[in-house]
Each structure stands twice: as structure tokens, then as C-alpha cells.
Length: 161
Image 1 (cartoon, one colour):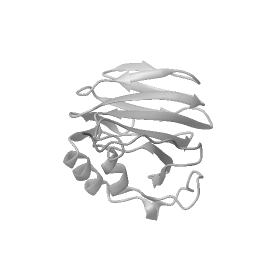
Image 2 (cartoon, rainbow, N blue to C red):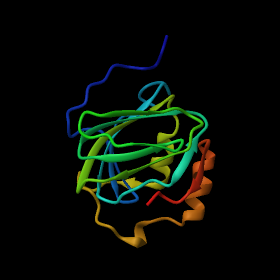
Image 3 (tube, rainbow, N blue to C red):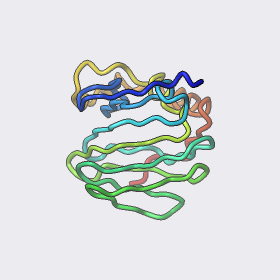
Image 4 (tube, helix red, strand yellow):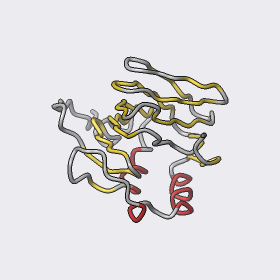
């Protein structure tokens, strides 16, 4: 018998984390789903970008709710707008960037596990607003790279311009 229980969250509910300039509200964590997946709603301002990286343990799916992203996967650029979905299989280098003034999207990681990295390197959100940029809040990038590797990921380079 599984320990996984049904759950239902209202729009404003979930585990909210400020993570390097983004607001992430986890609608489902690996703990909630028996490590089957995690699901977060992310909101970020224009210019927010991930470094080029690869996951060895999980696939990622991005579904844009508002705004526009550019998502490069294995050298191919995708530009989803509202309602657009992009799938990034494990093992392929990828990065993403917010192209509109602001964007809100869902990111799904399967199987679960990588959400622990966001909890380890972010901080509980005090409000459900995008945090103001404060360089003092950003961790040492060497430590960030090492922490990603603990979760089976690898940072390959800076965000694409």
C-alpha cells in the first residue's frame, strides 16, 4: 500500500520559495507524490535565465501560463508563449530565459527528487511576489554548481545571451 495521498491545492497554496530572483510555488513535491514527480509554478521577470545545464535523472516539461520564454534544448531554440509546452528529456543540455516583461509557467520534473535542490538553495518566500533583485541573496556560484551535481545535474555554462 502506498503512502501517497490525494491532495488538492487552491491557487495561492503550495510551498513557496524565492530562488535566485524567481518566485516558485511548488504545487506538488517529490514527498507529496512518492517521488514520482514535482510540479512548480514559477514567476520571473524579463532577463531571468538558467545556466546551460543537463539533468541525468529526470526529464523536465515547461508549460507557459503567461508571457514568453525562450528554451534552448540541444542547440534548438523554442519560443513558447501562453499555452505552449516544451519537453526536455534527461541527458540533453538546455537553458531557458524570460523574454517578456514577466512570465509565469509550470515546470514538471519526472521522476521526483530535483525539487530538493530548490529547497536547499532557495529560501521560504515571505510573500507570493517575485523577490527584488539583491546580489547579497545569491549564493556562491561554485557552491551552486556543486549542489546541482549532488542532484545528478551538471552546469555546462552561463545563460545564453
